[in-house]
Structure formats: structure tokens, C-alpha cells
Length: 378
Ligand code: ADP
Ligand code: MG
Image (tube, rainbow, N blue to C red; front, side, top):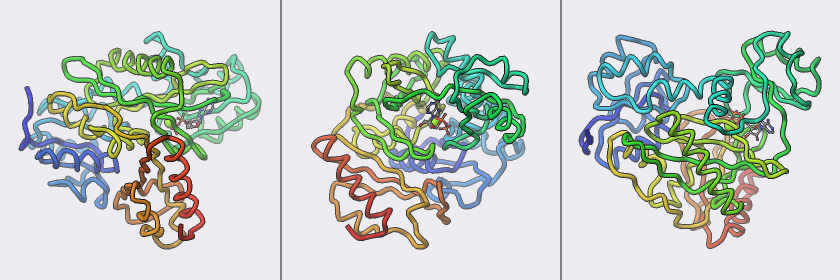
């Protein structure tokens, strides 16, 4: 059943993805209730209501579920049991099963294979002995199976001995040992899937990481039309296999030998989709509103070449950056998430620089970033 404006959407999680969703939902006339334990979260600042509670607080979930017409999420580590529990009150989109797959790298990579796609060569490591039976080429990366993000919980290793040390260092939790592949490029596909099972992809994004964290996204990606199609098709296949409802992302590696490998997926809107806010007819956040409320798709057309650059706490240098200097570029849109404290590696905001062609967008965005990094006026 379509939920019209005026209905109430419950958002599990209060981070920046929830914040940008909240703006999109309220723009369309919906009410938003955020459930998030942190009293000072980016999303709650802008929501109609904030329930401060843990994600497994049954009493709070009952009250939350009772007030919402539909529940969605911005955080992939919401316990599956929480999503399941809420289904007694209202639809939950995406469903627990679809979210759960992305919570464990071992499950996720095995799932990718069952979809007929290729993950990066990996071995599941549950105990020390698994390292020695793994047929992985070194160098490799040992990653915790659960709760890793922005390169956290990952250690590069050059031998089985180093992998063993790394496994101990990570506390002997379940891990994947993944071959480190030579990357030509990283790309991602953000897509939306409706309750009826239809899929719409956003334009493919090209992503550059620094220290394991997304630095910038370039759109359109500088890849062949055939690769665009292959990536969108692979992402669509994953969404179909998951029977996913809402907006999700798939990250890919393009290897130097031209292979397309699935890196990981996110059962939610994605940092590499922030460019859609300023450069597409419909943003990924509006599309999520549309999907969870059973509204029609918004058009996903790219209106202009764009580069999105993340603003980490690293560029704060004690006080906030020189925004006036950044805003002197009239084709640049600044987004800040309202986080109180800037820390190294913490995502504080982003900007999108639009230009007539990708090369100009890259150059202008880089110039702005350099000034921020060096704390000098443009
Ligand atoms: P996270 O959950 O932190 O995003 P990822 O597995 O996506 O973890 O790793 C973060 C980044 O580290 C990737 O986007 C890529 O740049 C690099 N990376 C991760 N795994 C590999 C690999 N197997 N080979 C080469 N680079 C990798
Ligand atoms: Mg990643």
C-alpha cells in the first residue's frame, strides 16, 4: 500500500545517511522518527522525533514500531532481530534477511558466488589452522568478518606467519583472508529496488580511496560502456537475489587485467552516492523514501559531470575549515553533517563540484581540497 506524504517513517540509525534521508523525507512532507542511542546524532537534529534507545531495547522498539507506518535503516549493523521484531508493527524495508547478508564478510562473499558473480579470491578464517590450509596468494588482507568500515579491522599481510600474527592481533574473531588485487579502478553502483521487484540503477560512480576511506567519487566513471553495463547488471542481480527493497550499493574492483570483482555491498544508501544529491534529478535519499513508501521511481539521470569529495576531521586543523573560500567556487555545493567533534578519519561532511566535463570537475575539486588540506585560502 502506498504511504502518502503525512505518513510517518521510522529511521533506524542517526548518522549522516539518516540525516540526508530525513531531509528528503521531510521535503516530501513525511514525518520522520529516528531511533538512535547517541543523543547528539546528525539525523536526530533534523527529525520530527528522536527516540534515544539501544537498537535491542524491546520496550523502545514497541513504542517506535507503534508510531511508524514503515521502518527503514541507514546503518548496516542494526541487529537482524531488531528488524524482524519490528515487522509485527509495520513493514520493514529492507527486510532482516537482506540486511544480514552484508553484516558478515564470509556470508556476503559466499552469497556473491551463489548469484553467479566473482568476489575477490578469499578464504574464511575461523581459527589459526585455517590460515595454513588457505590457498591465497600473498600479499593479502586479513579483514574481520563483522563490524569493519572505512578500512578498520583490516591488516595487510605478506606471509602466512604475518597472517597468523594479524589474526591474533584482531582477537581471533572470524575473518576473511583476501588476496590483495592490483586495482585499475574502484567503482560502485547504487540502485533502488521496489516492492514490486523492479530495479533502477544510478550512474556508475568511480571511487578513489585514501587510507581505506573514500576520498572522492567521480561521475560519470571513466570506464567503457560495456563495463558500465556489466557493473549495473551485476548489482541488479545481487539486489534481485536478496529480494532487496529500498536503496543499496555494490562496490566493485576493476583489476589491471580487466576483471570485474565484487568487493562488498551495503544494504543502505552509500557515501559514493552522495553525488546524486546535487547532480541527479533524484537523489539516492529521495529514492529510498520513494521505495519504502511504495511511490514510483524518481528519474536517476545525471544532470552534470560531478566530483564528490569527503571532508574528514583531518581538515579541521583545530578550528573549522575556511568555508568562505570553498564557497567562492559557485559550482560547489557544501554539505555538513552537524557533528560536534572533528576527529581524524571521521566523516564531517562532503562537497560536490559540478563542471561541464569530468576533467574540469576533478581539477576544481582538487584545487579546493588542496586549499582545505593546507589551510590556505584559494
Ligand atoms: P570497508 O568495509 O572498510 O569499506 P573494504 O573491504 O571496502 O572495507 O576496503 C576498503 C578499501 O581498501 C577498498 O575500497 C580498497 O581501496 C582497499 N581494499 C580492500 N580490499 C582490497 C583488496 N583485496 N585488494 C586491493 N585493495 C583492497
Ligand atoms: Mg568498502
